[in-house]
Each structure stands twice: as C-alpha cells, then as structure tokens.
Amino acid sequence: MTKRILAKHPENPILTAADFPGAAMYIFNPGVIKFNGEYLMMADVATLAQPIFLHMARSKDGVHFKFDEKPLAWPEPDPIHPEDCIYDPRITKIGEEYFIVYASSSEGRGVRVGIVKTRDFEKFERVSIASESGNRNGVLFPRKINGMYCRLDRPFGNPRDSAGMWLSYSPDGVFWGLSEPVMDPRVGLWDNGKIGAGAVPIETEHGWLCIYHGTTQTGAGVIYRLGAAMLDLKNPAKVLARSEDSILWPEFDYEMFGRVPNVVFSCNAIVEDDGMVRIYYGAADTCVGLAEGHIEDIIESCYSKNPYLLRPKGSPYYLGDAPKAAPVRVEQPSAEPASV
Image (cartoon, rainbow, N blue to C red):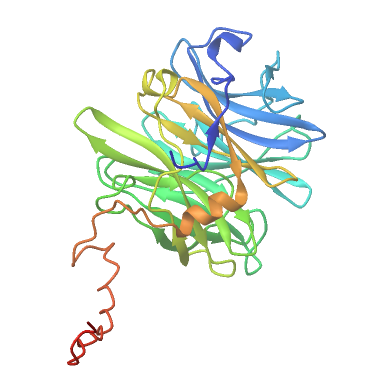
C-alpha cells in the first residue's frame, strides 16, 4: 500500500461535544495556533438551539485538549451586520497581533467574512466585516504582500453553483479590493464542486503552501476532502502546482456520520520544528480529528501525478503524446554456412 501523506491520530476523534463544559451538540472546524507554550484551539460549538459560536480549548501536547470554562470575550457585532452565528475561524499571526478571520452570519442578511484581532487571546477587537454577502472561507497570509494585507476567500452567488478561491488585498484590513480568481474547481477530480481555503498559507522556499478543501457530488450527497496547492510567493494568484490527489478524506464512522456526513474540513496547519505538520480537522461537522504528515511530503504531493488517472486527448489532464521510440536496428544473419 502506498504511504499516506497524512496519518490520522490513533486517538481520533480527539475532541467531541462530550468534552464541552456546557450543553453542546457538536464541536468542529477549529482554528489552532501555538501561543505561550500551548496549543490554542478556537472551535465551532453548535448549541442545543442550533446557532454556532466559538470557544477556546487548550493543550500542552497538541493531542489532549481541555475547554475553557468561560466563553470568549467576543466583541460586539458590527451594527451594519448583526452577526448571530460565527464559525470556521482561521488564526494568522502578523507581527505581534493575531487575526481571526471567520464566517460571520446574520439571519436574513447572509454570511460575510469577519475579522477580529487580539494580542493575548483575552481581549478581542473587531477589525471589520470585510466582504459583501455570500463570502466565507477567508484566511490572511502571515505577512503583507506588496505592502498590503492579503487574503484568500470563497465568494459564491447561488449556493448550488460551483465556486472557486479568490485573492484580495487591503491597506488596513477594512477596505478590500484588487480581487482576482486563484483556483477553480476541476472537472473530473475530487474537487469538482466547490473549493475553499483551509489552513493559513505556509511560506516555503517553493512558494506558499495552501491546504484547501474541495467537494464532489455523489448519488448519496457531497463529500469534502483536503488537497494542497503551491502559490507564487510574490503573486499568490499564480498557481505553481496543485495536487491531483486528495491528501485527506472521510473513511471512518466519525467522519462519515454526523451533522454533515462525509466531511473532513480544516482551518489550520501547525508546522512543528522538525517539519511535522499537524492538521486539526472537523469530522462530519460533529467532532475534531488530528492528522499528521511531513511538510516535504505535502509539498511533493502538489507536483505528483496520479498513475491511474485516465488522460485521453482533449482532457485537461492529458500529458501529451509519448515520444516516438528510436528505430531499432536489426542485425541480418550471416550468409556464411554454419560450422560443421
């Protein structure tokens, strides 16, 4: 069997609603970052009334997490967008500040990209409601590009239409523009439905490593998987490479049955000092799993080709005609009689 890019932790799921100190139905899709010697996990919590809010859990070893007893001191909603449901946070450190980019939903007004910042994860300050309605899966790059904040997001009009990832810039985190498409769904592959940013982009010598999610429609519903892509360091709208294969997919009961079946969905990727990458992912929008793999293997997956993928002429995955074989010279048998 081929070695997997990401291995799932034997203690999965590592966090469930049973671990929450109050009443909750589901725990999923956390943002995670290392801060002051701890792993901080900001997780989606679905209450018994259905709305989702964010709550902090902490761990010393990155596997065993304990929820805080008190809720986050989340800032008051923006009057122009009175959010009543917040979810899917991505946490980016820029300088000494930590920016939380999340989905901000307001009943009757749709979902928008929200941005909040903190220095200590005790006090939070609202930066902006940073998009029009119908946009989510926002994530900030960990440094400014061309002197501006840069983010990936996933605008969508009709929720049933396919939707791709876009790039936007801002001088201050409030006003965003210069938007352009980055990646679209791919016909015939695991990400042929919708795609969206997952983890905070990871800067490497090869480019920005982007771990993202993609969907495909089946007769039994939608499947969410994870893949990887490499974006240009100076112009992240330029895709250098993109994995043909998914690197994480639902296969176990805790990923295939739940609030939303057949889902693995990540908002984070923690790179350890030895190059090991830890990805904490939402499983079936119900609980949290952990998958681990080496960063070099994830980078390599961006460039690898699936040996079983059919590539007929006219297909976007056609690799071109095989080179013609060189003519083989056939030696003629000698005309001399054989020795007796």
